[in-house]
Length: 251
Image (cartoon, rainbow, N blue to C red; front, side, top):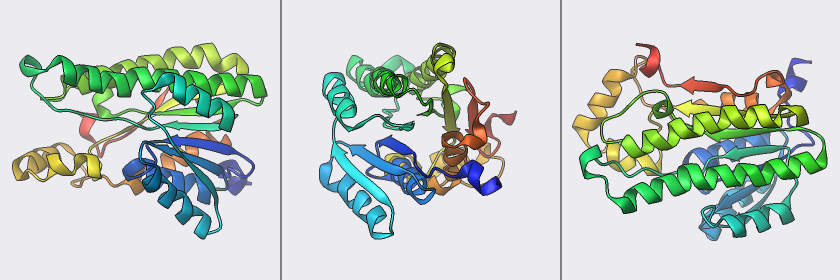
């Protein structure tokens, strides 16, 4: 009975930013839990390699090359490939820069992907869920920086705070359709996106000083949260968040 709560057998899941890092790890985990997974990333060869790896282990997966910031193109793709039962809204980016130095280009790039694209991607998938009439789970990949500030991260924090608010409001609108909307909020996770920042020894030491459990996160640390939110184990949870930060925000 407990295993059934966490099973994703018979579910169809869509994962953006699935070619590497967090998206890759969680796409593999959703497939292992029984879901049929559609993986999306801008680089077709990269995301197909992940899908092929899932299929090689007996899972069900296909890949689609798409840029989620092209809202019309993503909408057309998702409508054709869907509907889905689970959406892991994972694609995101960061361009650290002190507040006084933030350029319009960097602001637009971060907000366009982390907020605008995430908003309309979730909207598209939610419409498919509504039409299907079987409910669903939307998981927005947020950050601990959606709950606290961070030096050099004013735009990133702005985008993630906004994503948290969007999640709560969307949860209210979609509840009557049985669609749940929640976020996962990681601390610094060792991925290709964070490698450049964490290569700076002083920056790395500062990060580790704030993570009370004394280590950086890995994509594997997020698997439990993703399976929980995607499955019936979280059937009464919506408009909320799971902070996986090693104690960063506990102070």
